[in-house]
Amino acid sequence: MLGLKLPTDPRWVNIVEKNIEEILTDHAYCEQKAASTAISLIVTHPEYSELVTAMTALAREEMGHFRMVHDRLLQRGLTLGRDRKDEYVIKLMTFFPKGGSRLSSLIHRLLYAALIEARSCERFRLLSENLEDRELAEFYRSLMVSEANHYTMFLNFARQYGDRKEVDQKWQDLLKFEAEIMKDLGKSETMHG
Image 1 (tube, helix red, strand yellow):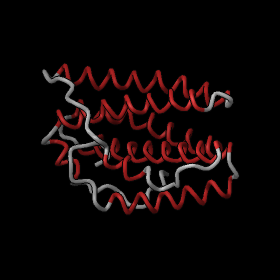
Image 2 (image 1 turned 60 degrees about the vertical axis):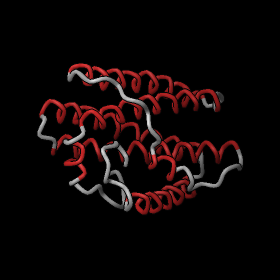
Image 3 (image 1 turned 90 degrees about the vertical axis):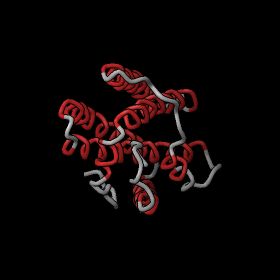
Image 4 (image 1 turned 180 degrees about the vertical axis):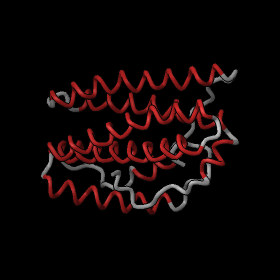
């Protein structure tokens, strides 16, 4: 369903299990960044009323997820650590050339967001199926559905605002690029790394 060209090595979950505080901190910041992306799309593309409405709801939902992750840190006697660079996102964002029309920039941002949500969904599924901590596994199962919905929402907006054939080609090219990035990742206790 997600279209990812390279699945995450299931052994990534073993790394996560040894570093629960790190994955929860990284996950919390991912949720905060997702909310920021939604707000940024509102600010930069206010003329797309349907997008603005969807991003308003998304920003609220993502901050709710941030709170849920933060609550889990506190329940475990942990604190939210410092944010760190997301190497996955940094590398991913190099795919489309900078510049171009406002519309092409919007399409590219929507495709990036769709792919980040798809990879998060895939990672949440792995955590939900393989974590020994059943409470945390169930938590990730509950979030997995949201991520899948976000992935399809972003992809559908890209297809709605752009030429469908062109958008689908860009999507396939981006998926191939992402698979190359993933070959070097999956070795750390970060949501995407």
